[in-house]
Image 1 (cartoon, rainbow over the protein chains, first blue to last red):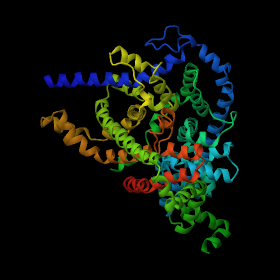
Image 2 (image 1 turned 90 degrees about the vertical axis):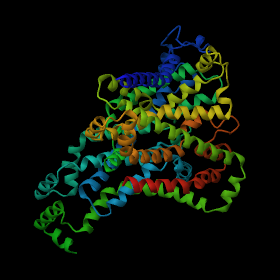
Image 3 (image 1 turned 90 degrees about the horizontal axis):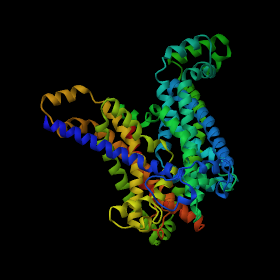
Image 4 (image 1 turned 135 degrees about the vertical axis):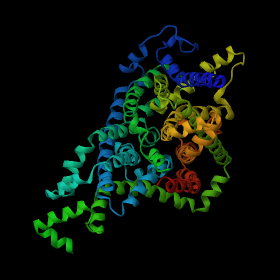
Length: 280
Length: 296
Protein backbone atom coordinates (compact mmCIF):
# COMPACT_ATOMS: atom_id res chain seq x y z
CA UNK A 1 0.00 0.00 0.00
CA UNK A 2 2.89 2.34 0.77
CA UNK A 3 4.24 2.01 -2.75
CA UNK A 4 0.78 2.76 -4.19
CA UNK A 5 0.78 6.03 -2.29
CA UNK A 6 4.30 6.80 -3.55
CA UNK A 7 3.25 6.18 -7.13
CA UNK A 8 0.33 8.57 -6.74
CA UNK A 9 2.55 11.24 -5.23
CA UNK A 10 4.93 10.88 -8.17
CA UNK A 11 2.03 11.16 -10.58
CA UNK A 12 0.90 14.42 -9.07
CA UNK A 13 4.46 15.77 -9.12
CA UNK A 14 4.94 14.81 -12.77
CA UNK A 15 1.62 16.35 -13.80
CA UNK A 16 2.45 19.54 -11.90
CA UNK A 17 5.84 19.92 -13.56
CA UNK A 18 4.43 19.21 -17.02
CA UNK A 19 1.64 21.74 -16.52
CA UNK A 20 4.09 24.47 -15.54
CA UNK A 21 6.42 23.54 -18.42
CA UNK A 22 3.54 23.64 -20.90
CA UNK A 23 2.02 26.87 -19.72
CA UNK A 24 5.10 28.98 -19.08
CA UNK A 25 5.97 30.13 -22.65
CA UNK A 26 2.29 30.78 -23.33
CA UNK A 27 1.94 32.73 -20.09
CA UNK A 28 5.00 34.73 -21.10
CA UNK A 29 3.60 35.42 -24.55
CA UNK A 30 0.33 36.74 -23.14
CA UNK A 31 2.19 38.70 -20.48
CA UNK A 32 4.27 40.50 -23.08
CA UNK A 33 1.22 41.11 -25.23
CA UNK A 34 -0.35 43.16 -22.42
CA UNK A 35 2.84 44.93 -21.35
CA UNK A 36 2.95 48.68 -22.10
CA UNK A 37 5.94 50.16 -23.94
CA UNK A 38 7.41 51.70 -20.80
CA UNK A 39 7.66 48.35 -18.99
CA UNK A 40 8.93 46.26 -21.88
CA UNK A 41 12.59 46.54 -20.93
CA UNK A 42 12.09 45.70 -17.26
CA UNK A 43 11.59 41.94 -16.93
CA UNK A 44 9.04 40.94 -14.26
CA UNK A 45 7.18 37.79 -13.28
CA UNK A 46 3.78 39.47 -13.28
CA UNK A 47 2.78 42.29 -15.55
CA UNK A 48 2.36 45.48 -13.52
CA UNK A 49 0.33 47.76 -15.75
CA UNK A 50 -1.65 45.45 -18.00
CA UNK A 51 -3.05 47.13 -21.09
CA UNK A 52 -4.82 46.18 -24.29
CA UNK A 53 -3.12 49.02 -26.19
CA UNK A 54 -0.85 46.64 -28.08
CA UNK A 55 -3.86 44.93 -29.61
CA UNK A 56 -5.23 48.34 -30.52
CA UNK A 57 -1.93 49.32 -32.17
CA UNK A 58 -2.00 46.11 -34.21
CA UNK A 59 -5.65 46.27 -35.21
CA UNK A 60 -5.44 49.95 -36.19
CA UNK A 61 -1.98 49.51 -37.76
CA UNK A 62 -0.55 52.28 -35.61
CA UNK A 63 3.09 51.28 -35.83
CA UNK A 64 5.37 51.00 -38.87
CA UNK A 65 5.93 47.34 -37.93
CA UNK A 66 2.28 46.48 -38.36
CA UNK A 67 1.25 49.01 -40.98
CA UNK A 68 0.12 46.16 -43.29
CA UNK A 69 -1.50 44.00 -40.62
CA UNK A 70 -4.87 43.69 -42.38
CA UNK A 71 -3.19 43.17 -45.71
CA UNK A 72 -1.08 40.32 -44.24
CA UNK A 73 -4.12 38.81 -42.59
CA UNK A 74 -5.98 39.02 -45.91
CA UNK A 75 -3.06 37.36 -47.71
CA UNK A 76 -2.96 34.54 -45.16
CA UNK A 77 -6.71 34.03 -45.45
CA UNK A 78 -6.58 34.05 -49.25
CA UNK A 79 -3.76 31.51 -49.50
CA UNK A 80 -5.24 29.28 -46.81
CA UNK A 81 -8.69 29.30 -48.39
CA UNK A 82 -7.27 28.47 -51.81
CA UNK A 83 -5.22 25.61 -50.35
CA UNK A 84 -8.28 24.34 -48.55
CA UNK A 85 -10.32 24.18 -51.75
CA UNK A 86 -7.49 22.61 -53.75
CA UNK A 87 -6.70 20.00 -51.10
CA UNK A 88 -10.36 19.07 -50.75
CA UNK A 89 -10.69 18.53 -54.50
CA UNK A 90 -7.49 16.54 -54.82
CA UNK A 91 -7.96 14.45 -51.69
CA UNK A 92 -11.65 13.74 -52.23
CA UNK A 93 -10.95 12.45 -55.72
CA UNK A 94 -7.91 10.49 -54.61
CA UNK A 95 -9.70 8.90 -51.67
CA UNK A 96 -12.56 7.90 -53.97
CA UNK A 97 -10.08 6.24 -56.30
CA UNK A 98 -8.29 4.40 -53.50
CA UNK A 99 -11.21 3.65 -51.22
CA UNK A 100 -14.09 3.03 -53.64
CA UNK A 101 -12.70 2.13 -57.06
CA UNK A 102 -9.88 0.11 -55.45
CA UNK A 103 -7.75 -0.27 -58.54
CA UNK A 104 -4.65 -2.38 -58.92
CA UNK A 105 -2.29 0.56 -59.41
CA UNK A 106 -3.73 2.13 -56.26
CA UNK A 107 -0.91 0.89 -54.12
CA UNK A 108 1.54 2.97 -56.15
CA UNK A 109 -0.63 6.02 -55.67
CA UNK A 110 -0.84 5.44 -51.94
CA UNK A 111 2.90 4.79 -51.76
CA UNK A 112 3.43 8.09 -53.53
CA UNK A 113 1.32 10.00 -51.03
CA UNK A 114 3.08 8.30 -48.13
CA UNK A 115 6.43 9.35 -49.58
CA UNK A 116 5.21 12.94 -49.96
CA UNK A 117 3.97 12.93 -46.38
CA UNK A 118 7.23 11.67 -44.94
CA UNK A 119 9.86 13.58 -46.92
CA UNK A 120 10.61 16.88 -45.16
CA UNK A 121 9.16 19.68 -47.26
CA UNK A 122 12.31 21.73 -46.75
CA UNK A 123 14.32 19.16 -48.72
CA UNK A 124 12.37 20.15 -51.80
CA UNK A 125 12.31 23.87 -51.06
CA UNK A 126 15.36 25.18 -52.90
CA UNK A 127 14.68 23.30 -56.17
CA UNK A 128 11.03 24.32 -55.79
CA UNK A 129 12.12 27.93 -55.50
CA UNK A 130 14.22 27.52 -58.65
CA UNK A 131 11.39 25.89 -60.58
CA UNK A 132 8.96 28.64 -59.59
CA UNK A 133 11.55 31.18 -60.73
CA UNK A 134 11.77 29.44 -64.12
CA UNK A 135 8.00 29.67 -64.49
CA UNK A 136 7.96 33.29 -63.36
CA UNK A 137 5.74 32.41 -60.43
CA UNK A 138 7.90 33.86 -57.65
CA UNK A 139 6.16 36.44 -55.49
CA UNK A 140 2.77 35.15 -56.62
CA UNK A 141 0.32 33.23 -54.46
CA UNK A 142 0.19 30.43 -57.02
CA UNK A 143 3.62 29.19 -56.00
CA UNK A 144 2.70 29.00 -52.32
CA UNK A 145 -0.68 27.43 -53.07
CA UNK A 146 0.93 24.71 -55.21
CA UNK A 147 3.48 23.90 -52.52
CA UNK A 148 0.99 23.79 -49.66
CA UNK A 149 -1.51 21.74 -51.63
CA UNK A 150 1.17 19.20 -52.48
CA UNK A 151 2.23 18.78 -48.85
CA UNK A 152 -1.20 18.95 -47.21
CA UNK A 153 -2.92 16.58 -49.64
CA UNK A 154 -1.41 13.25 -48.42
CA UNK A 155 -2.67 13.51 -44.85
CA UNK A 156 -6.06 14.75 -46.02
CA UNK A 157 -6.24 11.84 -48.43
CA UNK A 158 -5.40 9.29 -45.76
CA UNK A 159 -8.05 10.51 -43.36
CA UNK A 160 -10.70 10.51 -46.11
CA UNK A 161 -9.55 7.14 -47.39
CA UNK A 162 -9.87 5.61 -43.94
CA UNK A 163 -13.41 6.88 -43.83
CA UNK A 164 -14.21 5.85 -47.41
CA UNK A 165 -13.32 2.25 -46.54
CA UNK A 166 -16.10 2.12 -43.95
CA UNK A 167 -18.91 3.01 -46.40
CA UNK A 168 -20.73 -0.20 -47.37
CA UNK A 169 -20.27 -1.30 -50.97
CA UNK A 170 -24.00 -1.89 -51.43
CA UNK A 171 -24.56 1.86 -51.65
CA UNK A 172 -22.40 2.14 -54.78
CA UNK A 173 -23.86 -1.05 -56.15
CA UNK A 174 -27.48 0.04 -55.91
CA UNK A 175 -26.57 3.39 -57.49
CA UNK A 176 -24.83 1.56 -60.30
CA UNK A 177 -27.91 -0.56 -60.86
CA UNK A 178 -29.87 2.66 -61.22
CA UNK A 179 -27.48 3.56 -64.00
CA UNK A 180 -25.13 5.98 -62.22
CA UNK A 181 -21.59 6.20 -63.62
CA UNK A 182 -18.50 6.77 -61.47
CA UNK A 183 -18.77 10.56 -61.75
CA UNK A 184 -22.40 10.55 -60.66
CA UNK A 185 -21.59 8.23 -57.77
CA UNK A 186 -18.71 10.50 -56.76
CA UNK A 187 -20.73 13.69 -56.75
CA UNK A 188 -24.17 12.51 -55.64
CA UNK A 189 -23.32 9.73 -53.24
CA UNK A 190 -19.70 9.82 -52.15
CA UNK A 191 -19.30 13.56 -51.47
CA UNK A 192 -22.49 13.91 -49.38
CA UNK A 193 -21.50 10.86 -47.33
CA UNK A 194 -18.04 12.18 -46.50
CA UNK A 195 -19.08 15.79 -45.84
CA UNK A 196 -18.35 15.77 -42.07
CA UNK A 197 -14.86 14.43 -42.71
CA UNK A 198 -14.40 16.91 -45.55
CA UNK A 199 -15.05 19.74 -43.14
CA UNK A 200 -12.37 18.47 -40.76
CA UNK A 201 -9.89 17.80 -43.52
CA UNK A 202 -10.56 21.16 -45.19
CA UNK A 203 -9.90 23.03 -41.98
CA UNK A 204 -6.74 20.98 -41.52
CA UNK A 205 -5.54 22.11 -44.97
CA UNK A 206 -6.52 25.69 -44.18
CA UNK A 207 -4.39 25.82 -41.05
CA UNK A 208 -1.58 23.83 -42.63
CA UNK A 209 -1.16 26.79 -44.98
CA UNK A 210 -1.89 29.34 -42.23
CA UNK A 211 1.01 28.00 -40.13
CA UNK A 212 3.54 27.70 -42.95
CA UNK A 213 6.68 29.77 -42.65
CA UNK A 214 9.48 28.32 -44.82
CA UNK A 215 7.72 28.24 -48.19
CA UNK A 216 6.03 31.55 -47.52
CA UNK A 217 9.33 33.27 -46.75
CA UNK A 218 10.98 31.67 -49.79
CA UNK A 219 8.30 32.43 -52.32
CA UNK A 220 6.82 35.78 -51.28
CA UNK A 221 8.87 38.94 -51.06
CA UNK A 222 6.89 42.15 -51.46
CA UNK A 223 5.95 43.90 -48.22
CA UNK A 224 2.31 43.79 -49.29
CA UNK A 225 2.47 40.23 -50.63
CA UNK A 226 3.66 38.41 -47.51
CA UNK A 227 1.52 36.36 -45.15
CA UNK A 228 1.18 36.97 -41.40
CA UNK A 229 3.96 34.63 -40.19
CA UNK A 230 6.44 36.13 -42.65
CA UNK A 231 5.50 39.59 -41.46
CA UNK A 232 6.06 38.46 -37.88
CA UNK A 233 9.41 36.91 -38.73
CA UNK A 234 10.49 40.18 -40.34
CA UNK A 235 10.26 41.88 -36.94
CA UNK A 236 13.46 40.05 -36.05
CA UNK A 237 15.50 41.79 -38.72
CA UNK A 238 15.21 44.99 -36.71
CA UNK A 239 17.17 45.61 -33.51
CA UNK A 240 14.46 47.67 -31.85
CA UNK A 241 11.57 45.34 -32.61
CA UNK A 242 8.53 46.10 -30.43
CA UNK A 243 8.17 42.68 -28.82
CA UNK A 244 4.97 43.59 -27.05
CA UNK A 245 3.33 44.30 -30.43
CA UNK A 246 4.82 41.14 -31.84
CA UNK A 247 3.32 39.12 -29.00
CA UNK A 248 -0.08 40.79 -29.38
CA UNK A 249 0.12 39.85 -33.05
CA UNK A 250 1.13 36.31 -31.99
CA UNK A 251 -1.93 35.98 -29.80
CA UNK A 252 -4.23 37.14 -32.62
CA UNK A 253 -2.51 34.77 -35.06
CA UNK A 254 -2.73 31.78 -32.69
CA UNK A 255 -6.36 31.95 -31.66
CA UNK A 256 -7.99 30.56 -34.84
CA UNK A 257 -5.72 27.48 -35.14
CA UNK A 258 -5.98 26.74 -31.41
CA UNK A 259 -9.78 26.67 -31.62
CA UNK A 260 -9.62 24.44 -34.66
CA UNK A 261 -7.06 22.01 -33.20
CA UNK A 262 -9.21 21.49 -30.14
CA UNK A 263 -12.41 20.94 -32.10
CA UNK A 264 -10.88 18.53 -34.58
CA UNK A 265 -8.11 16.94 -32.56
CA UNK A 266 -9.62 13.49 -33.06
CA UNK A 267 -8.99 13.79 -36.80
CA UNK A 268 -5.56 15.33 -36.43
CA UNK A 269 -4.04 12.60 -34.32
CA UNK A 270 -5.57 9.95 -36.46
CA UNK A 271 -4.47 8.90 -39.94
CA UNK A 272 -1.02 7.72 -40.89
CA UNK A 273 0.53 6.85 -37.58
CA UNK A 274 -2.51 5.46 -35.88
CA UNK A 275 -3.16 3.46 -39.03
CA UNK A 276 0.22 1.95 -38.35
CA UNK A 277 -0.74 1.41 -34.71
CA UNK A 278 -3.68 -0.69 -35.71
CA UNK A 279 -1.47 -2.58 -38.11
CA UNK A 280 1.12 -3.60 -35.54
CA UNK B 1 -12.59 -3.59 -77.21
CA UNK B 2 -15.32 -5.43 -75.41
CA UNK B 3 -15.92 -2.38 -73.24
CA UNK B 4 -16.29 -0.17 -76.26
CA UNK B 5 -18.89 -2.47 -77.70
CA UNK B 6 -20.82 -2.84 -74.51
CA UNK B 7 -20.95 0.84 -73.67
CA UNK B 8 -22.21 1.55 -77.17
CA UNK B 9 -25.66 0.38 -76.11
CA UNK B 10 -27.36 1.86 -73.06
CA UNK B 11 -28.41 -1.42 -71.57
CA UNK B 12 -24.86 -2.66 -71.75
CA UNK B 13 -23.72 0.48 -69.95
CA UNK B 14 -25.91 -0.35 -67.00
CA UNK B 15 -24.71 -3.90 -67.03
CA UNK B 16 -21.14 -2.68 -67.00
CA UNK B 17 -21.68 -0.47 -64.00
CA UNK B 18 -23.28 -3.26 -62.06
CA UNK B 19 -20.32 -5.49 -62.67
CA UNK B 20 -18.04 -2.58 -61.74
CA UNK B 21 -19.71 -2.26 -58.38
CA UNK B 22 -19.65 -5.97 -57.89
CA UNK B 23 -15.93 -5.97 -58.61
CA UNK B 24 -16.06 -7.90 -61.88
CA UNK B 25 -15.04 -4.90 -64.01
CA UNK B 26 -11.86 -5.66 -65.92
CA UNK B 27 -8.75 -4.62 -63.98
CA UNK B 28 -7.73 -2.44 -66.88
CA UNK B 29 -10.75 -0.16 -66.93
CA UNK B 30 -10.76 -0.16 -63.16
CA UNK B 31 -7.18 1.11 -63.32
CA UNK B 32 -8.21 3.74 -65.87
CA UNK B 33 -10.97 5.06 -63.62
CA UNK B 34 -8.71 4.99 -60.59
CA UNK B 35 -5.92 6.81 -62.36
CA UNK B 36 -8.30 9.47 -63.65
CA UNK B 37 -9.52 10.19 -60.13
CA UNK B 38 -5.94 10.19 -58.84
CA UNK B 39 -4.73 12.39 -61.68
CA UNK B 40 -4.50 15.70 -59.76
CA UNK B 41 -2.56 13.92 -57.05
CA UNK B 42 -0.20 12.34 -59.54
CA UNK B 43 0.40 15.64 -61.33
CA UNK B 44 1.25 17.42 -58.07
CA UNK B 45 3.57 14.58 -57.12
CA UNK B 46 5.45 14.60 -60.41
CA UNK B 47 5.70 18.39 -60.65
CA UNK B 48 6.52 19.30 -57.07
CA UNK B 49 8.08 16.21 -55.52
CA UNK B 50 9.73 14.17 -58.28
CA UNK B 51 10.98 17.09 -60.34
CA UNK B 52 12.66 18.91 -57.40
CA UNK B 53 14.11 15.59 -56.24
CA UNK B 54 15.52 15.05 -59.71
CA UNK B 55 17.46 18.31 -59.33
CA UNK B 56 18.87 17.12 -56.06
CA UNK B 57 19.83 13.71 -57.33
CA UNK B 58 21.74 15.22 -60.27
CA UNK B 59 23.48 17.52 -57.80
CA UNK B 60 24.23 14.56 -55.54
CA UNK B 61 25.90 12.73 -58.41
CA UNK B 62 28.21 15.65 -59.06
CA UNK B 63 31.64 15.44 -57.39
CA UNK B 64 31.94 19.22 -57.38
CA UNK B 65 29.17 19.42 -54.80
CA UNK B 66 31.14 17.40 -52.28
CA UNK B 67 34.39 19.22 -52.97
CA UNK B 68 32.82 22.58 -52.33
CA UNK B 69 30.78 21.61 -49.29
CA UNK B 70 33.28 19.46 -47.44
CA UNK B 71 35.83 22.25 -47.73
CA UNK B 72 33.52 24.60 -45.87
CA UNK B 73 33.97 24.12 -42.10
CA UNK B 74 30.50 25.59 -41.54
CA UNK B 75 29.01 22.75 -43.58
CA UNK B 76 30.80 20.13 -41.52
CA UNK B 77 29.69 21.82 -38.31
CA UNK B 78 26.14 21.95 -39.66
CA UNK B 79 26.12 18.19 -40.16
CA UNK B 80 27.30 17.73 -36.57
CA UNK B 81 24.60 20.13 -35.33
CA UNK B 82 21.90 18.33 -37.28
CA UNK B 83 22.95 14.96 -35.90
CA UNK B 84 23.00 16.35 -32.35
CA UNK B 85 19.69 18.15 -32.77
CA UNK B 86 17.88 15.23 -34.37
CA UNK B 87 19.52 12.58 -32.20
CA UNK B 88 18.93 14.23 -28.84
CA UNK B 89 15.74 16.21 -29.37
CA UNK B 90 13.78 13.41 -31.01
CA UNK B 91 14.90 10.63 -28.70
CA UNK B 92 14.48 12.54 -25.47
CA UNK B 93 11.10 13.76 -26.67
CA UNK B 94 9.83 10.31 -27.56
CA UNK B 95 11.11 8.75 -24.39
CA UNK B 96 9.30 11.46 -22.41
CA UNK B 97 6.21 10.87 -24.55
CA UNK B 98 6.36 7.17 -23.70
CA UNK B 99 6.51 7.93 -19.97
CA UNK B 100 3.98 10.76 -20.03
CA UNK B 101 1.48 8.72 -22.02
CA UNK B 102 1.63 6.18 -19.18
CA UNK B 103 0.83 8.84 -16.61
CA UNK B 104 -2.05 10.11 -18.74
CA UNK B 105 -3.51 6.67 -19.47
CA UNK B 106 -6.52 6.84 -17.19
CA UNK B 107 -10.03 8.11 -17.58
CA UNK B 108 -10.39 10.37 -14.56
CA UNK B 109 -11.72 13.84 -15.23
CA UNK B 110 -8.66 15.61 -13.89
CA UNK B 111 -6.36 13.63 -16.19
CA UNK B 112 -8.58 14.34 -19.17
CA UNK B 113 -8.55 18.04 -18.35
CA UNK B 114 -4.77 18.10 -17.99
CA UNK B 115 -4.35 16.14 -21.23
CA UNK B 116 -6.23 18.91 -22.98
CA UNK B 117 -3.98 21.56 -21.41
CA UNK B 118 -0.88 19.62 -22.46
CA UNK B 119 -1.97 19.89 -26.09
CA UNK B 120 -1.58 23.69 -26.15
CA UNK B 121 2.00 23.81 -27.53
CA UNK B 122 0.91 21.57 -30.38
CA UNK B 123 -2.16 23.68 -31.19
CA UNK B 124 -0.31 27.00 -31.19
CA UNK B 125 1.49 27.71 -34.48
CA UNK B 126 5.22 27.33 -34.30
CA UNK B 127 6.07 31.02 -34.69
CA UNK B 128 4.52 32.50 -31.56
CA UNK B 129 6.07 29.76 -29.46
CA UNK B 130 9.57 30.34 -30.78
CA UNK B 131 9.28 34.09 -30.51
CA UNK B 132 8.15 33.82 -26.91
CA UNK B 133 11.05 31.56 -25.97
CA UNK B 134 13.49 33.71 -27.88
CA UNK B 135 12.54 36.85 -25.98
CA UNK B 136 12.58 34.82 -22.78
CA UNK B 137 16.26 34.18 -23.42
CA UNK B 138 17.11 37.74 -24.33
CA UNK B 139 20.20 38.51 -22.27
CA UNK B 140 19.05 41.93 -21.12
CA UNK B 141 15.28 41.83 -20.97
CA UNK B 142 14.33 38.19 -20.86
CA UNK B 143 12.68 36.50 -17.92
CA UNK B 144 15.18 33.63 -17.93
CA UNK B 145 17.96 35.87 -16.66
CA UNK B 146 15.62 37.28 -14.04
CA UNK B 147 14.97 33.76 -12.78
CA UNK B 148 18.62 32.81 -13.07
CA UNK B 149 19.65 35.88 -11.06
CA UNK B 150 17.03 35.27 -8.39
CA UNK B 151 18.36 31.75 -8.03
CA UNK B 152 21.84 33.18 -7.61
CA UNK B 153 23.13 31.77 -10.88
CA UNK B 154 23.97 35.12 -12.50
CA UNK B 155 22.99 36.27 -15.97
CA UNK B 156 23.97 34.62 -19.24
CA UNK B 157 23.96 35.36 -22.94
CA UNK B 158 21.85 32.31 -23.68
CA UNK B 159 21.78 32.53 -27.44
CA UNK B 160 25.31 33.88 -27.80
CA UNK B 161 27.09 30.57 -27.32
CA UNK B 162 26.77 27.55 -29.57
CA UNK B 163 26.02 25.03 -26.85
CA UNK B 164 23.40 27.00 -24.95
CA UNK B 165 21.80 27.97 -28.26
CA UNK B 166 21.64 24.34 -29.38
CA UNK B 167 20.27 23.35 -25.98
CA UNK B 168 17.59 26.02 -26.34
CA UNK B 169 16.65 24.58 -29.73
CA UNK B 170 16.38 21.09 -28.31
CA UNK B 171 14.30 22.27 -25.38
CA UNK B 172 11.99 24.22 -27.63
CA UNK B 173 11.59 21.24 -29.93
CA UNK B 174 10.57 19.07 -27.00
CA UNK B 175 8.14 21.69 -25.73
CA UNK B 176 6.49 22.08 -29.13
CA UNK B 177 6.28 18.46 -30.28
CA UNK B 178 6.03 16.37 -27.11
CA UNK B 179 2.22 16.75 -26.96
CA UNK B 180 1.60 15.35 -30.44
CA UNK B 181 3.72 12.25 -29.93
CA UNK B 182 2.31 11.72 -26.45
CA UNK B 183 -1.17 11.60 -27.95
CA UNK B 184 -0.04 9.13 -30.62
CA UNK B 185 1.59 6.79 -28.09
CA UNK B 186 -1.34 7.23 -25.72
CA UNK B 187 -3.65 6.03 -28.49
CA UNK B 188 -1.45 2.96 -28.89
CA UNK B 189 -1.53 2.34 -25.13
CA UNK B 190 -5.32 2.50 -25.12
CA UNK B 191 -5.25 -0.33 -27.64
CA UNK B 192 -3.60 -2.68 -25.12
CA UNK B 193 -6.23 -5.08 -23.72
CA UNK B 194 -6.98 -4.28 -20.07
CA UNK B 195 -7.01 -7.98 -19.19
CA UNK B 196 -3.24 -8.05 -19.60
CA UNK B 197 -2.83 -5.44 -16.87
CA UNK B 198 -5.31 -7.29 -14.65
CA UNK B 199 -3.41 -10.51 -15.15
CA UNK B 200 -0.19 -8.69 -14.32
CA UNK B 201 -1.72 -7.24 -11.16
CA UNK B 202 -2.87 -10.68 -10.03
CA UNK B 203 0.67 -11.95 -10.50
CA UNK B 204 1.82 -9.08 -8.29
CA UNK B 205 3.66 -7.04 -10.94
CA UNK B 206 4.75 -3.57 -9.75
CA UNK B 207 4.56 -0.43 -11.88
CA UNK B 208 7.98 -0.97 -13.41
CA UNK B 209 7.38 -4.64 -14.14
CA UNK B 210 4.02 -3.85 -15.73
CA UNK B 211 5.76 -1.39 -18.01
CA UNK B 212 8.72 -3.68 -18.72
CA UNK B 213 6.78 -6.86 -19.45
CA UNK B 214 3.39 -5.66 -20.70
CA UNK B 215 3.30 -2.09 -22.05
CA UNK B 216 6.75 -1.81 -23.56
CA UNK B 217 6.80 -4.97 -25.69
CA UNK B 218 3.39 -4.04 -27.11
CA UNK B 219 4.43 -0.44 -27.78
CA UNK B 220 7.88 -1.17 -29.22
CA UNK B 221 6.71 -1.36 -32.85
CA UNK B 222 4.84 1.93 -32.82
CA UNK B 223 7.61 3.55 -30.77
CA UNK B 224 10.12 2.66 -33.48
CA UNK B 225 7.89 4.04 -36.23
CA UNK B 226 7.36 7.27 -34.29
CA UNK B 227 11.11 7.64 -33.74
CA UNK B 228 11.95 7.17 -37.41
CA UNK B 229 9.15 9.44 -38.57
CA UNK B 230 10.02 12.19 -36.13
CA UNK B 231 13.72 11.93 -37.02
CA UNK B 232 13.00 12.37 -40.72
CA UNK B 233 10.71 15.34 -40.04
CA UNK B 234 13.27 16.94 -37.75
CA UNK B 235 16.13 16.48 -40.22
CA UNK B 236 14.33 19.01 -42.40
CA UNK B 237 13.55 21.51 -39.65
CA UNK B 238 13.97 25.09 -40.79
CA UNK B 239 11.56 27.35 -38.95
CA UNK B 240 12.56 26.56 -35.37
CA UNK B 241 16.25 27.05 -35.98
CA UNK B 242 15.95 29.98 -38.31
CA UNK B 243 13.79 32.02 -35.95
CA UNK B 244 15.48 30.96 -32.72
CA UNK B 245 19.14 31.46 -33.66
CA UNK B 246 19.26 32.21 -37.39
CA UNK B 247 22.44 30.13 -37.33
CA UNK B 248 24.10 32.58 -34.92
CA UNK B 249 26.47 32.98 -33.18
CA UNK B 250 28.81 33.08 -36.15
CA UNK B 251 26.98 30.44 -38.23
CA UNK B 252 27.73 27.85 -35.54
CA UNK B 253 24.16 26.63 -34.97
CA UNK B 254 22.97 25.95 -38.51
CA UNK B 255 21.09 22.78 -39.43
CA UNK B 256 20.69 21.49 -43.00
CA UNK B 257 17.76 23.66 -44.03
CA UNK B 258 19.03 26.92 -42.55
CA UNK B 259 22.46 26.43 -44.11
CA UNK B 260 20.84 25.76 -47.49
CA UNK B 261 18.88 29.00 -47.06
CA UNK B 262 22.05 30.89 -46.16
CA UNK B 263 23.96 29.55 -49.18
CA UNK B 264 21.08 30.28 -51.52
CA UNK B 265 19.95 33.69 -50.36
CA UNK B 266 22.80 35.22 -48.38
CA UNK B 267 25.63 33.99 -50.61
CA UNK B 268 23.64 33.64 -53.84
CA UNK B 269 24.90 30.06 -54.40
CA UNK B 270 21.79 28.15 -55.27
CA UNK B 271 23.66 25.00 -56.31
CA UNK B 272 25.33 24.88 -52.90
CA UNK B 273 21.91 25.23 -51.35
CA UNK B 274 20.60 22.30 -53.37
CA UNK B 275 23.85 20.47 -52.56
CA UNK B 276 23.24 20.62 -48.81
CA UNK B 277 20.04 18.58 -49.22
CA UNK B 278 21.57 16.47 -51.97
CA UNK B 279 24.32 15.25 -49.64
CA UNK B 280 21.76 14.41 -46.95
CA UNK B 281 19.49 12.63 -49.40
CA UNK B 282 20.95 9.08 -49.18
CA UNK B 283 20.42 8.83 -45.41
CA UNK B 284 17.01 10.49 -45.59
CA UNK B 285 15.76 8.27 -48.39
CA UNK B 286 17.01 5.19 -46.56
CA UNK B 287 14.98 6.23 -43.48
CA UNK B 288 11.95 6.99 -45.65
CA UNK B 289 12.02 3.59 -47.35
CA UNK B 290 12.40 1.74 -44.06
CA UNK B 291 9.41 3.71 -42.79
CA UNK B 292 7.25 3.06 -45.83
CA UNK B 293 7.93 -0.66 -45.51
CA UNK B 294 7.01 -0.56 -41.83
CA UNK B 295 3.87 1.53 -42.20
CA UNK B 296 2.36 -0.16 -45.28
